[in-house]
Length: 281
Length: 284
Image (cartoon, rainbow over all chains, first blue to last red; front, side, top):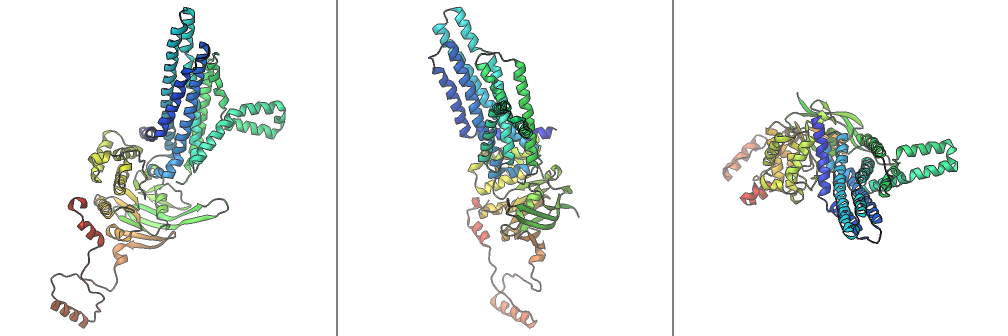
């Protein structure tokens, strides 16, 4: 078992190293940080609105930067290795194909979590900077100062960051799955983006069809069930919007979504292993 | 007889896509490689050499037949533990340094800790990339250096069998000689080496036995000494014989019914001449 973990970690480490040594990822991270930092200069609103805006843009930047890094990273995972033929010298070793896939996935996840850690720290820093600014400007009244502190030090930030993280983990697993059946990096990016969009729209479409009565036909029902099983429902992660809006989101809901994500990650990586096992290299 | 690699009726067809049929890349290859042998797979491009190697490595699944490595079915983990592989062109992650590459391959082979670090040092010395050269990024390496570091990577798990796909393709004569010397050194250490090449002169220098493939079919197989010896001819090289002595020898041979087919001063091979022309430090 030690050898198995060592091999997975070797692939993960190499994937991570490859990504961090590429300039494009640093540029994307910089782009995300500029978005987060730039949001601090929108000062035309009340302090509650300013904090809401900062959090909204902060989490959205994390999600967008993560999506771009995840897509670009995943696109290079297996098709990139096949194109460069570096996969030959890895898979001819006593390395099982599922170990290779898990290693690639974990490497990508390390990268995404590193990026999220840096960006979460940036969001936290911007919120505290804004807190100091607003208390200096409007916080003579202790009640107002307490409200500003409460907005800036919102503990629900942990929930929001966790939700962004698990959403990106599912996107990365999707990209890994497509990378095992793809022959080109473009295919991986296009398919992952397509499923990502369908995942956002599927629950809305399903509700509309159910309301319109079309879904009473068994064929349509089967199709809807199939789509909802095969494609993760990305609307579940809209809990982040509730957190930004200041609504209470119970930890149970956050953990349920986390559990749902973990199940999908295992299903997608299992499917990726099956697809990759019989593939000629 | 202990066999390192054995194939029976090994066959591979590739699907060319919808409604485009199939391509037969290798047709029923039977091959036996003994332990400690240097074995050459010869043939022009597209003859099936790399396909055969990839099936032995488990990278391609055979359409028919079977392959075994040291008694284990090809493609299984136990079979892959016995093989080291150097691909045709230096396909390595070029963001790594030489040492990092060998360490990565060592970890993929399940190694770690001091044992791995010791092995890396030993191998980098063996392929003459010790010291600063091993710390440079691979993108700054010459093709010969890449092949040598690839060889270190192939050897890191201490495999029984080494498979080298066109190891000297695109490498200059000095680099080519280094790789050839390394192959001979590995044979000295008891390793089995299977290599493919279309550079026949180089094969001649190192291989014990060869198979000649053409369009996926085996044309010939045997020991080089048997395949290349001209039956009924005899050759002798002498030194210090004057013109009068030569005439006398020729007359003696003709008197005994022998026909002199060729007579010339022996020539050096161009590669040897080229290497001898280089300054001493560049020959190493």
